[in-house]
Image (tube, rainbow, N blue to C red; front, side):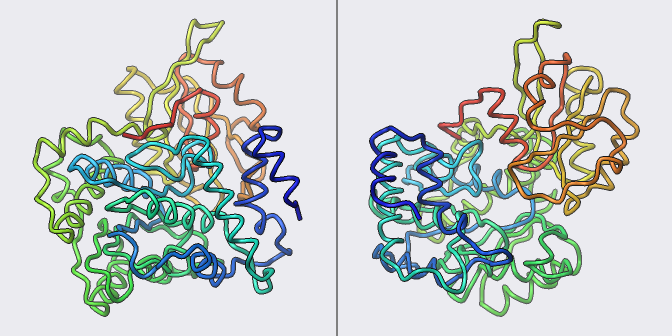
Length: 429
């Protein structure tokens, strides 16, 4: 285990920020035993050591779901801030780096504040008894760090994204005013349960007695039945967000699947404003907030210098379903007049790999599967993919090898591509 001398080297600038995060946020996770899982009690113990009241934080909107959480978080936070509130936001994961996770009014913390925050939380963590039944998850470390910082700087509203799940996630130990639930897929079945109903039950379980409202995207019948029962059981008002609910936001939020999540974020933010006794957000505030959101990796467009073709236009999307892949392909064709000359795909078996394979087989341009070695994802075998195969080390060359490139897959893949594109993520609005 690293000691005070190691941390002193980090804080003096002798070690980079990745090393600092490894020594603090990822320390218990890195030391876990094979097969060991997170211990939910560690989060509560750490919060208590920091003097936090998890049951009564600032009014908080929790965001759960299998896909679309980040967009929901970004637009909800932007609208709350547009009305004049000081807003603390936790993303899980960050856009391209861990420092992106904790934000105030859309901006990352200055580096000295971020370093001091990690040091403060790690000091409290080291004061706890050594882990016995499991570790503190990195997402829990950043969540409690965010809560500590938001309390210190007087944030008036919070938007908090879950890591994995809801009830089992550390977010489920925070007293939430409201819960926004994005679309639910069959994912993480080893942790959340073997069926859509079980997964929906875990995710909506982040809302506990005292949570005033639950908003959710239109779901499968079995998922909606679970959400309805849980909301009724805890006495929470329930709002279903479908295409009709998105209609008033047409022309304000993006098109496609991301637009539904964006509208959902604003609908949930407006409901939180009502709980705070704040005036209703005006149409002008909604438009201004939407116009300020800069959330790359969701059908975002970037340009890279390309010695062979002058420049490459790179489209990045974090879709993990056949429908999302098809939507991204249509978006590129609308923008450029043709299918992408090169498509880079990175999705594990736990997502809609069959849907991706089916669409990839019909594309005219090259389709390359990119496997990231730094993440533990259940990628297909090489012969399971109907196209070329590459690793993260090949990305710099691939991204510059064609005039139009679509990079699509998990959030970790989008983050990798965004880094190579040099995208500034210091502000999301």
